[in-house]
Length: 274
Image (cartoon, rainbow, N blue to C red; front, side):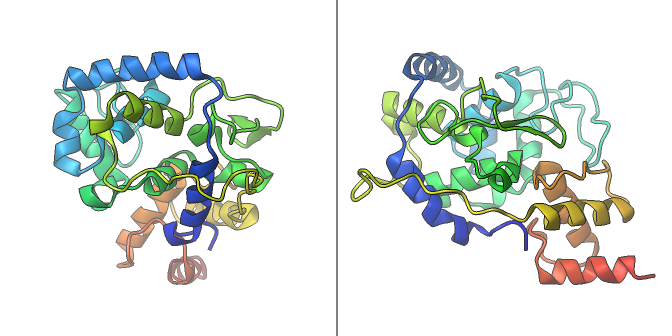
């Protein structure tokens, strides 16, 4: 399996969260306060209540994806009032909360359960959304950690183009979420933030890889079997690959968890064999 399940990655996230410090405090403060303005305006209320996704997850994720442009569909970045051109087709939408609900259902965020959201779960779902590829380059993803001591550089500057010297100029979702809760404690996740105990002076752990070649082989196989959109064969197991896996699993009566485990690979190989 090229993507670790949550139970495997959870201890790593716990350790990283306990060691995290914000390094771009001024920027984080400004963004967190701007996002709280959207919170106060009720932008996320309907969608978050309907799906159980915490408001700080919704706010930080949409800021990262679309700079909080509420004229865009949070699922695929298409204009809100148009139909998406790639599978899963969705839209047009009359309003952003309806699009928000649809987006979270596409990626299964509504299945987590409101009471089950922890900081580690937020890390896992957000890293999975953007892709686990940076792990194969020995880096913690900027999508989560940019703006903190955990992030040490490197990013994909285009499909299948990893630049080890590039610095992610956006903020990661975790420092945004963390600062929002500092300012507004009522927005805290149901399961508390990990407290640093014995983490002082402990080196930040390296991320375990997720299998670059396995992920690339999976992408190539799904393309042959008609993945829509066709996947970039880059070994970065992200949202499109996960959605393609879920679509394949659903069509073949497998558990649609988005993880290409032995049963999913067996089904893929059986489909490819003829």
